[in-house]
Image (tube, rainbow, N blue to C red):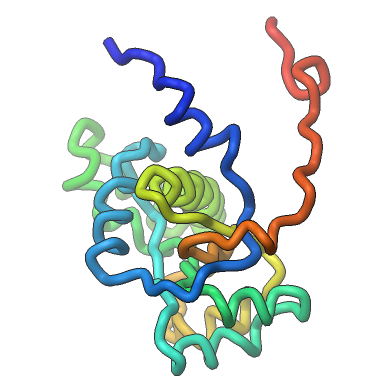
Length: 197
């Protein structure tokens, strides 16, 4: 049985962690990105479908392709971030289900010809996987700045021209510079957010 994390770990993952808007000029290497994916992929998804896909935008050429799709307020911080992860989902994720979810032999067939089920499953579970990526980044000592202020169609055209993958949201990644943090916003109380039935 798992034990509760200590206060230091809780602070790093949640209590002291911030949405990062400014990063140190410190590179994030390939090994760190690979370790990040190796950790986040263990988070649960529906039927172990793992529809999430990630493009780590790091090169100047890739940054230039992304720039035109960003809303104004997200341009400077994204261009300055060491890496921007495009969190997307694969519209053909179900083709992997025979190997990923052998407990249900007919799982793949549920999705064939059902674009709405593919979209809702892909979007929901790639959102989960993006959240796992944020927590994995924090666990590895990185900071994250998730955002949705961009043109999905433009990102899809620039990075996924074959139409198989669809963008969901973006996460800037790197080593944070706290001078770029806004004052921390309040969180809703339990009574507003939750009910015990």
